[in-house]
Length: 187
Image (cartoon, rainbow, N blue to C red; front, side, top):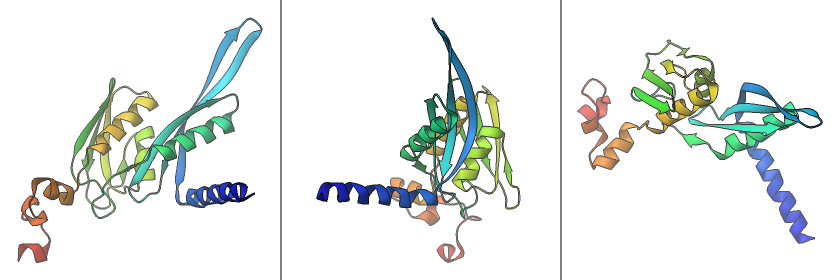
């Protein structure tokens, strides 16, 4: 009896965590398999999940029904989340490039008020991440799976000045250019 209550308790905690995440359905594919008895249809879903505060993940799910495929993809996305440091909570710290297969994406920081300038699947990643200002371009593959993987590859390379300073054993003020350094660090 105690085990059942314990299991129920864990399940409730897991459900309590979910409202903090927003999800975006990026693509649904209908796939068919021809068998002796006819055609069997299935669905593949691609979902991006994020907390809009610097965490994002993507997942893909396959099932006979669309809602089940979306549910599987969402669960996988929540398991594969990464944390990305953001500057002022609205843009990237530095320009970067991401690659996956034939897909290549270029992401650049942008001044306040620029908005999200990005194509379909990349836009979903930035919105779920919580980025407000970014300029990006997809070069090569237009496949949404490859575009999202290339975007995630680039975002994994993102480093904040604090992380770079810690890695080099310096102060944050030494890492930043003079015009970017905080006023109190410059004095």
